[in-house]
Image 1 (cartoon, rainbow, N blue to C red):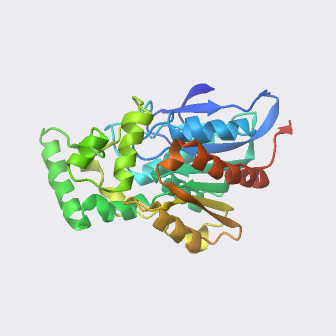
Image 2 (cartoon, rainbow, N blue to C red; image 1 turned 180 degrees about the horizontal axis):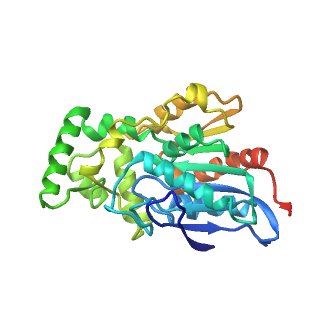
Length: 313
């Protein structure tokens, strides 16, 4: 694995990314490639890299796992900005970079995203037809989630509060950075939190896979674009690539079950597959061997079918 710094003319900052290589990697061979995108609040060293990225590389793909701009090892200011359109631009710039690599076939690039990264990857596939195959792992439409649970079902009130906060920060007040999760599962339960997604997210980020780059936080004053954003807009006409949607059948407050069913029904893709992993939850699909194994047993053949194998140059 290598860590690279990506900068293209259209980018406002450098992006840090890990590249995972297939076994017996030969730079003289052209490989199919996959962009593997981490969840909101995560980083390249967690599930997108150490589980799905590693498995796809082992199966013969070159896999690039970027950190979100303003987060992790990537540049960008202000830090912890969560702007969905910027995420999609970042992914497209990562594809620009992939297409310059002599060992990547520029016509055989796929995309995989997890949680919010799944929603962002769906949007990227809607507008960028260089993406030849799409996989969403427990994907979430962050715009829908923000308009509902993240804003306490008061998106206009949230926008008004953001406007007040941004005005205050422009006058010199301290930035407001919202942390998504409690400090521990026990603290969450003591605060009355019962939602499976929040508690299991806390266990994943605070216990199972601690990483310095995983901020699990968001700059409140710069979050307004997310409220007016929709990962699935125009999917009925523009989302045409082969698509696989994977989620567990234990639903939680972040809504991956609901969003997965929705995008599967709405996508114009003629070749689309729905994988419901029975008995497992959103965060089980991040790193637990049994459900991730079930997912990968479907994802790897799907990607091989649509992206093919390595070819001699």
